[in-house]
Image (tube, rainbow, N blue to C red; front, side, top):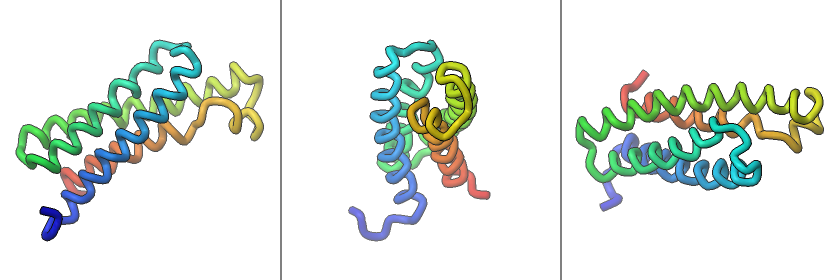
Length: 129
């Protein structure tokens, strides 16, 4: 079953597992903040959809599954960019300024960028460069 898999199939497997891992982390962080802002629900909903759709492409690499993953990946890039903005602004506003300590204890600006990176990698895997 595993022997002879093309690199793209391994990449979809990695992406599916990575999105599900990010889902767990982002859910824990946003639950800790009691979903302070409604936009915190976006990655909690999007990352498992991205993960499951990537794993579905591993199982059945058909055009419909690839189209769904493409759509979710485009939305994932947008959600990640919006999240990066909110995390950066939130650090300055809610924690009292942009210094190293506030970035260490505040909303992690790299986590939404991870959603952007994984979503972009999904698009590269699906459509090449």
